[in-house]
Amino acid sequence: MHANKGVYAVLLGSGVSRAARIPTGWEITIELVRKVAALQGASCEPDPAGWFLKTTGKEPGYSELLDAVAKTPAERQQLLRTYWEPTEQEREEGAKVPTKAHRAVADLVKLGYVRVILTTNFDRLLEIALQDVGIQATVLSTPDHIDGALPLVHTPCTIVKIHGDYLDTRIRNTPEELAAYPDAFNRLLDRIFDEYGLVITGWSADWDDALRAAMTRAPYRRFSTYWASRGEPSAKAADLIARRGATLIEISDADSFFDTVSEQVKALEEFSRPHPLSTEAAVVTLKRYLSEPKYRIALDDLVSREAENVAAATTVPAFDMNSRDTNGAAILARLKSYEAPSVTLIRMAFVAGQWSEGAQVNPWTKALAKLSLRRAQGGIVIWLDLQRYPATLLLYAFGLGAVATEQWASLHAMFNSAVARENREDKRAVELVPVWALFEQGSDVMKLLPERDRQFTPFQNHLEALLLPLFRPHFPSEDAFHVAFDRLEVMAALSYAIPAVEKGERYWTLPGAYGWRHENRQRIFGEIRTSLQSLGDRSPFVMSGIVGKTALHGLENLTQLEKFVPEFRWR
Image (cartoon, rainbow, N blue to C red; front, side, top):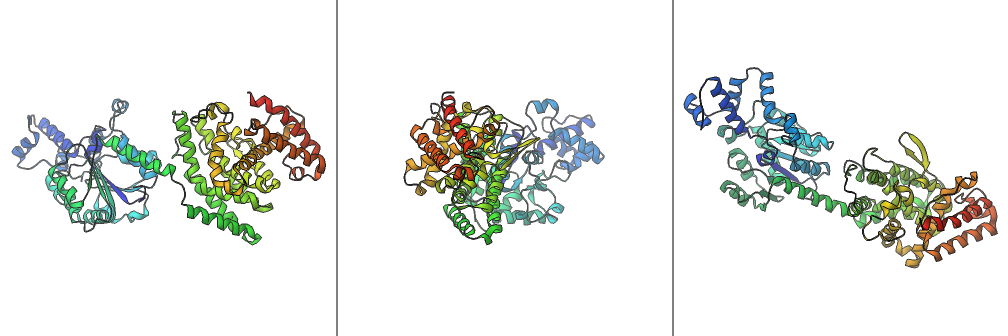
């Protein structure tokens, strides 16, 4: 399913909705027989269907019975609601509401893995589950619906209610009604069974002659069929399994089956990364666009498109902002789910950091601003904070490239790009996006990462482990990479503190791995001091604005940072 997105249709039988305590069409027909018998003052037990046949000479039919106990359409609708719509007590008991299976199928639809759902059920639990994840499905329950519907490929999700919808009296449930379908249904089923793979759950195949016939006459087996069954399938189901060459899957129930399928597909998607060729192609294209000013529009489009891809792949509702599972494993899984779709943008950002100048930085400040937005405003604090993590990845990747080629002006532009906040004033990216600025709960969250609870800078260490394999070829050694990482965080700390230095306010800035890597810190501080003292306001650190407006401001900033390091290191 993961490798064939949108190829598999799902067929759900009454076994899926029975877990929600939804009656089958035949069970409702029998209940209507009891109501007719009560109206006549007769007893129909112990065999209501037999009593009806003996009394009327006909098999019990849903539509005819419904007409006998409720004369107007409004009365019929109100009567039917009691079978499918929950009372307050039933809702509290979890009855007649979407089950785990319905919600798992809705997740698969949301992710694009399922686009067609066939069901023999009359209820609307699937529609409710889909609406809860933002999907408005196209529902086909009558020949008229089918004749007027868009092709399946042009809708995000199509539900084919083979036996009808409970608010329409034309539902099919008697043996005669299930023996043959209208031509419109047969044509649609022929297409689906020919063009799609199938995942079948909760369907016995015993009563639906027309549906079995449609499966049997399908000419090709382009994609696989998977038949999930509790216990041994019936003889008719076994015959269909053999005819379609289906794979039989033994399950305990539909809820656990679809929940497992959904979670495993999500896991494959979560840890899959863009194809190396697509990433390489994007990097090569970026280099060409950076080579000449005439490509400025194409450059903007390229970066904007990739930033949009990352934003779309990392937004709600795919990421639950209300999950109370905030242990280290859950946090690490969330990080990886943000990292996977960001790889191409990260690789591009490093190259851009190396070579972008002037207006070429503008697409990247826009991308940073876009990814810095918190798309959800309500939820658990840690998940809300982590919404900016894709922007953190972008900033560190661009920053490492800029550090490698000393593009301080470009880095300064990234640090100072404005980040909008809901109902609050904008802030500079350097105040919201670097690791130590991400979390309201600070280092307490960082130390939740598995096997990093005793590290000074667990989150930075995680980032280095992620970025080192991507950028190691651009540095003389692994140690040189770590020096570049520390130089980037020192520059972020100095940039963060500029307003406080210029206003003479209390000094506070961003901690980093440079705090405990003494040799790296002394080397970096020495380089900056030497440049400021020897070149003064002509120092590239001053001309770029990254440490302050003047050499004096820069030296004061650096001195304050040196004094601050021991304070935050032991905090």
